[in-house]
Length: 352
Image (cartoon, rainbow, N blue to C red):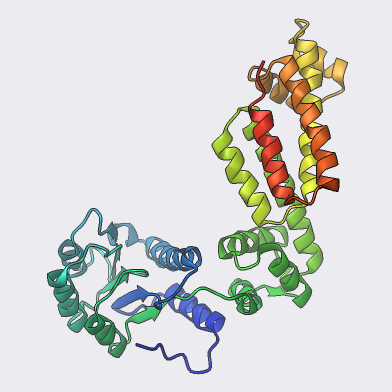
């Protein structure tokens, strides 16, 4: 069945849905689904989770909300049980929320039970059926659509992202300049999770200002990226390869300047080498090491902790890898993030 949105763009439609779900005046049933052929599963799943989190947060913000919120998954709970909860009167309050996720294993009899509920829902309950990528029977889709309960969740194409950014800031009472929006699009592309995180950080950075400028975005990006690079270094220092890869992917998604990553990584390894050189001589007093190396006490503590994971020759090898990394980034045609990834792996694999 085709969704009817009139002249609303995808961004406007999703923003309207977001505002609707932020309201305290919710309908009895919401069936989250996506159109056949939708390829961007990550974006759809993010939006579904975001919308559910908005509703759950609002309910739990009510004084009696904690008694009236049930979030269930079809892998653990039968749909019949979820519908029974939905038919249960709210406790100490006026409204109950039941969220039922999954639905992949629902059989014909289960769908018939869903149909019966949709035909006669309990209006003191808001039931969210989150089945974005489930093959829902056509009669269920038709009934939910006729009753006004069907909500299609679509991914946002790049051309719709500026409208989405403008809308999510306006919901917070903040205006985002066209230049700031353009910078955020350049920064995050169509990654809605990155955009949501950026929005939250920018609102904190510009508290009470009421407007986001491109300079604010630049400052936020610089702080975010710098923080993430230091987190990358920390993961390398404890030889956590899984976390290292995760942060590298985040830095790549944020389009962090590769030479900026290399600069901070090399800087940190030089600091580690200074401490490892002195500590290998038996000097472990923090004040003494700080005086000898010119490093702050907190950095001395950090490098001392990391030094237990690396021998002196391993740190020297790691610094050599960083020096080579700088040259390769400037001269190689290979994807810069793959070059950094290989360098990090080489550092993690250094052996004594």
